[in-house]
Image (cartoon, rainbow, N blue to C red; front, side, top):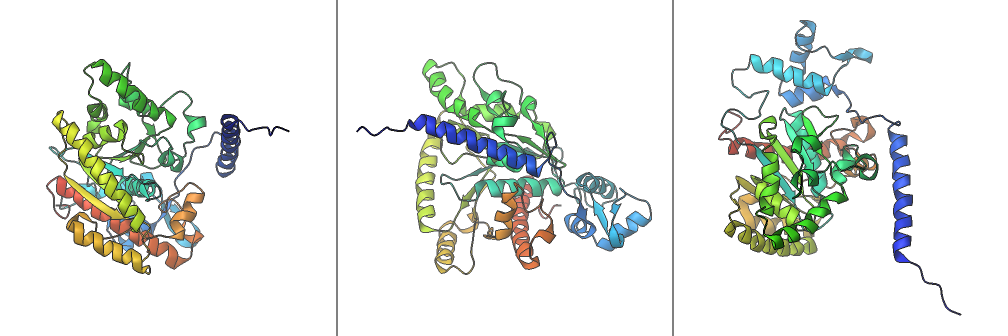
Length: 396
């Protein structure tokens, strides 16, 4: 008796449909139908930390009727919305002795900072790093554009977009960089619930660029594939201080175009031997391919390139050896601070949130504070690199 075989295309299609419906139901449970994600309000202590002032000073501003009025909750606790934080920055900047103390973004003559976050190997914490960097810079007063270049769209999901439901008619970067009838980049930019943070979400449409480019190269139509992301960004160049691009875990035409548009590169590294070996292959391939792009006229000069250690466990001996090995090899190109492996970060992800979004009360105090201190240290290092690229040291 013949055994009936399974049509793999039908099985995969059925699984995809069922999973998509389940994810949509999960989102509807977390966020009511037609509702948008909203960012929580921040305590006065958190806001004081973001602004670099004393909590007592914020209280005095409130009592004097200066700046935005916070929400007053039980026990007289003051809570500020993201818009309130930005309003405080704008108010305090007027009286600041040093320009940029509270609004640290671009000034006349500063170039747009385009940070690509890359790694060849999945699971290196690339999207987690990109999301927390983009959100922290927005909280710190920078005008940020996040771009999801990964067809898997994890950065989009973290910000409330489910591609198969929310991007039925396009709306990714592909629409702005395709070879025929590209749209202006601003047409695909979405506002997020984070003040100062806009997003270009991703979905499977991005793969079309990988398919279209060989045809364009064969036809020699004059459209250089590696300039397309940079050319598209020129449409909104004056509206942002920083662009954070979450690249796919592959070195295709899309990633090379993103690297050509970049002013800086952040490589995420999980400190395990297999991951470092994979990174070695990635670096060799990247160097060879970008060398070809440079010979074709691409600009491969960067303000900085750094490796960031992710999912780091301080008590893991082999990981410590691998970190020491990387520091001995690459010196200052490795960030001083690593991103710790934390249940707080992974648990926040279960509800499609970052650590900057979740309430501190959902975790034990030490777990939350260790993870937050780690993320803030990494992001502060990167922000200082951005400031240095603008010719400013210590924000001066």
